[in-house]
Image (cartoon, rainbow, N blue to C red; front, side, top):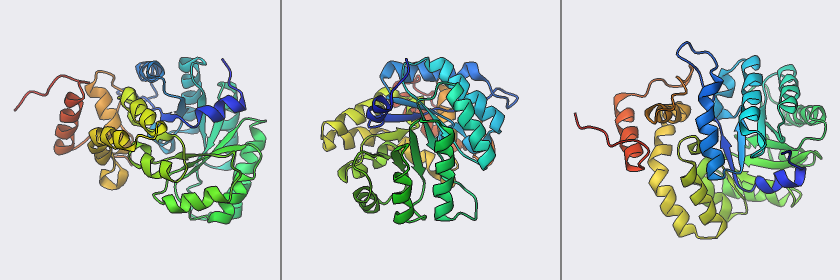
Length: 308
């Protein structure tokens, strides 16, 4: 099915699951390996699935690979959930990805914050405006990994007509609250730092959160979301405590293990999606590997590890 802007906006208050990008043993894109990940997430009821997000190693892909990734996700999801397509890089590449994402049936576009060392706040606004124009009416979600462009620029971004949401991925809930106050109340503000930060962002008015855990254990992410939506913060914190060590592993080495832990977990579960490309960390070191094996066994996602 196709999703209207109103339907997508409603889904945005749920979980935005960020899909991994699978590779084979020769470091080539291997689309078939993604299917079990998609099927688990859809079966669990994950509200939105995102191709070409950071858990998908967006900046480790060529533009052609990113185009293939969004088409693969669209084919596998097959309208069972909205597809959110990551857009970024140089202006020309970004516009090529918009075209590919529209062809793949994306319900909306997620614009990565430009990593260029020379970024002007007004330049970011123009960057998003051009992407929105190329999207020909597709809803746009802004992905803010830092708020250094300032609240005036964030307010200007939110005035772009196609912008329906902002994924706030900086650990500053009070700054988030001020940004929300200055924006159209119809904008959906999503916690962009996964499950662990979701309660803090919910407390100031955000809804929903991003998740890499959905690749591995989507039912647990859904349980956390349900608790937050019910206002049961104690239950949400208890559920987050169960998976917090997983997220702590992902944050090691300057966040360089973020995707590595997810892909290592998938391999241990029999759903090998290949290695992580440099500059990400690969493989996990012995301590990280041992801890991950214990967590997956505790969660009953793999058999208990045999003692050495």
